[in-house]
Structure formats: structure tokens, C-alpha cells
Length: 418
Image (cartoon, rainbow, N blue to C red; front, side, top):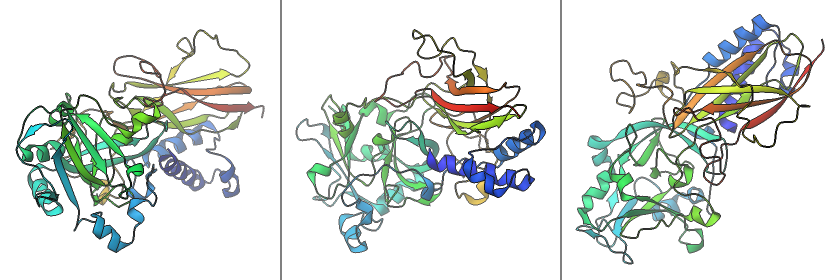
């Protein structure tokens, strides 16, 4: 969550400095400073209002693979291997080990592989844009929030004229022609051809926040699977294989990961003071990832450290949780978009008003905040959690690691006598 947290904190710090309520030398040592209640309330509200929602390409957190990293090759090598738009090609072929029934391969050998010009021709009619948060399956915090644009994968698959005996789609990214570096993932054909209710399509993505993908972000073309963790959204896409095999072939399976887990709903802190004086308000801000089960509330719980919690309640279901404020959709989306505005036709948004049809939106990010007051002197643990649209509290219903980390986050807080 470092890029999101950094921007969040810098905006908050800047506003406190503007108020003249703190000295510049004091800020680097504290994540957020609280003063008297009136100033804290005003500062918290203003800082939140200024937060940008989308993460710029350069600010995204990165999980990378490859030795060397594919996008770091010199320009002539990038052209040779098809990692620039002018020479990029995508093959869509059959699996000889489990043959599907289809009519037309898109292959380099036959000279029928999809090139950049062909993809852009498809984009003129079929391009879609949607918001999606990117999170590593084992990372526990978001890497960034983006507006992704591309052509639905199914549009390209239909070019092969599929007929029968297709159960999965395997897909691969460029791997330096080294079998040991091969990275692959897969999806059921049903997920590719049809979206879940209210869901977005799997896409061959070529733009992030209105700009062509950089090599670092997986360009020229990568897969984006909107309801899945990052390992499903393979970078530097070069090859798609239609197969009648019933089982997945994901590289991530070798690490004991649940390769079919959809995004989970969970809350994380972004800023809070580590220490305040008695009588000072405690401004706390955070983000929530909105998974497949949606989001209705974010809650916090402040508990004295000396109180031992019963071992038979590991998820703190009986704790005195209180509601934080779940913030509305932003007016300006940031991320480098012109005037902070989303382009017309973004999925999930009203065409007339440009506002989201629902909020928070699944597979995206939501901001939350709370100003805690009246806390007695002592040492505390501060925790946060989500309540999903089914009324289930984090980390349930899926508390297990290796399928997306969603443990309840805990931070210390000390309240001192004045």
C-alpha cells in the first residue's frame, strides 16, 4: 500500500502545515498529528477531500519477475521480442495435449497472429474501461488503483471460431525464452465468455489511466482479470492457448496458493497518530478493498493493551466495534487524468452524470475516516475491519492465507497525560 499511503500522508501533512498548527521539523517523525478537536476535525475533512483516488502508473507498487526484467532490455531487443507496440503479436492457438475444436489459429507460423494494428481495429468497436484495484495474492495491502482499458478477451477468442471441447484458457507472458522463468495463468472458458452479474470482462489491456501501458506496468499488452488477484493479470502477454484440459496450469499453484480465489473485502490503516495527549482528538484514515462480496461498513476498535482477549474469539467478533465514516466517491479521480475526470463510457458509471451507479464499487478501493475523542490515558491497540454486503465481518468468510490476505490490522496508540 506504499504508493497510496505516501500520497495520503503527504496530503495530510501538507494541510496541517498550511494550518500553521505544527512545525515542519515535527512532521517527519509522526504519521499524522492531532491537535485540539476543532483543528483536527477541519484538517481531517480537508485532507480527505484532497485525496486522489487513482494511482499514477509511476506510483503503482510493483511485483516483478524475470532476469533480466523483460522491459529492461535495450530498445532493439524489445523490438525483436515484440515488447513494443509496433512489433507486438499475440498468438491464440490450440493445446495439442488436450485439443479443442475451433477453426482458425492466430499464430506467428501462419502469419495470422493478432498484431497491434489488429487490436486497435477491434478497440474501435469493442474497447471497454473500468476501475480495478491491483493487489498481490500474498501482499495484504493494495498496490494501486487504476482505470484499465482494453478489448475483451472473448472478442479475440471468437475470431478463432471456437466450436466445442474448450474448458479452459491458458495464457502466458514473455519469459526471456527461458523455460525456468515461464509465468502462466488460466481461466475457465465460461469466465472469459460471460461476466458475473454486474461484473466487468476479462480484457487484453493496453491503457492505464488513459495512457498506454509502460513496460514496467506490463505493456504493450497485459491481461486484466477484474475480480482476481494480480497473478491472474499476466504482464507482457504473448500467447493464449485454448484447451480441453479440466485443470488449471497457474504458476502460482506451485506456491500453495488458491489460484481461483476472488478478491476479498478488507480494511487497512493509512494514517493515525502513534501518540497523543489526553483531550486531543485522534484522526484516523484508511482504505478498504472492496471484494466480490461488496462493502457496507468499515469499523474500528480501540482496546486497552493490558486486557487479554479470550482465545476462543480469534476474530474479535464480540469486541466493541464502532463505525467509521465510509467516504463518498471522489469528485476528482486523479491518476493523471485530464481535470481528474473519467472518460465517457467507463463501465459502472452513469452516462449522463458521470457518477458511479453504485458506491463503493466491487473490485475497487474505498476511503474511510474517523475522529476518535474522549480517550483516557493509557496504551491501546487500534484495529479496523470491514462488514461486507452480506453482513459478514472481516476476516470471514474466507480468513485463510494463500487466497488473499485479509487479516485484521492492528496498530498501537499511546494517550499521555497533558
